[in-house]
Length: 578
Image 1: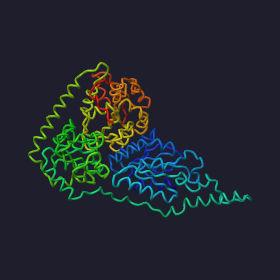
Image 2 (image 1 turned 45 degrees about the horizontal axis):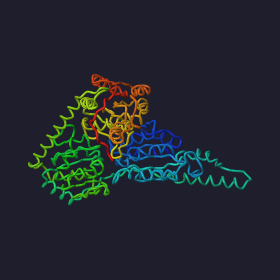
Image 3 (image 1 turned 60 degrees about the vertical axis):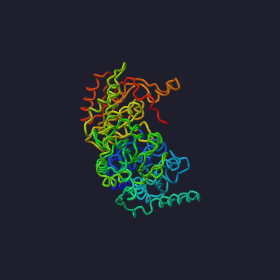
Image 4 (image 1 turned 30 degrees about the horizontal axis):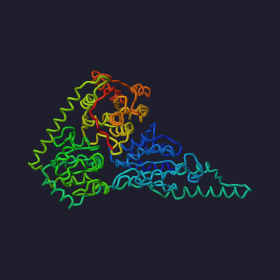
């Protein structure tokens, strides 16, 4: 077995089904061995997409996603995606090739200080120096990625640890015997042979282990009891559930049942969207800011007080706050909670539910008030949806049509600014773990990678990729990946010919649109060039037929891109975040 085969054996034992990559000589043995062991190797057109796809797999399955990239620029191309995974707390393992151990620092191809580069952006960097290090390093990477606050782990794999010993000897020029009379050459040969022996020594004695069970952080019973007392005396409680509460993928259903038992109004954000379905009586989607300001108790389940809550200012000053988070650093960020529990939010809420079973009758008026606001806001959106556009279709009308077309078993991937944020008001995920967005980092370019990972994990589901036309430019080439690997995805590009989320405020404040103007590019023709199907929407009457045709095509595992020309609207005016 070479080093690549040893890594592949670990991947199989860890339950890895997909390995995402962009090929390179530094990592070829890993790819070949993984495929031979039944791991599906999916090669993409940009290394960032490989990591985004691994991130999506982790979010949807709970098993760390895995990407393998070559050294140097192959690794630097992953940085944004790795940082996105770190901030989103996604468990993944990044295998990175590296220059041969004996050539480090001598000007070898693509030799850079990869450890220093990656260390700030991952939970841990694991470096291997001998073949026998590979198995324990990769096993430790999987464990570290899952425990505590999950996140990415980087394993550096020098190329001379991945190939067989005879090949490495040939590279080194380490002859089995040397009759050179030159003392320097004889010393060099002795050193090279010794180095190869040390590289491979003891590798056969290292065995692969079954992965240990990782238990999410438990909840303190006193904290749960205190939270129950706060909830029982509350008049206007609100529960805000964030992505972190969905890290225990298998427990999503139990978490939803716990929220039903508690009976307080629930707002969902990030990966938690869809947790209660589309129309649950406790679910509230609109005018969250007003609800938080009026609430007398706010339970933050996996959501810190960052910019998304205006650094805590969305919550009324007199409200009690129960903060539940795996990260101690996040508990008191910007607002000091009444109760801060370093725990898995889903575990805490499941423990809380039996202690407060049955919503008090006094919450009925509060629930009704929030419901009436929901209805009022929906009417406002309906009125804005009905407004026509002079050039293209109203984005709200398009989003309403997408929402109407979605089957119950669908996954939504969000990659964009203004169009995607508009969709978040209108398009409703139907089930738990059916919404993928970048998270707190606000990264553009996640779309194709996320959609790739989602389609592989959920082959029976319709995967809808909602693209802004700016964001589409980052990963449109992955249409080629979808075609080559038979991945059916419906990509809808909201094409308003601009970076509209930025342009709105920039033009109003600075009176200049520099850098924010795009063209009405024929994105559907680009997709066709890669072998996908392309459709265009230019007017309202085109919407229904185009979406229907897209669904027909994708059922045959053909990727589809729908280029939707959007009219300009003021729906999200003044929404710039800082």
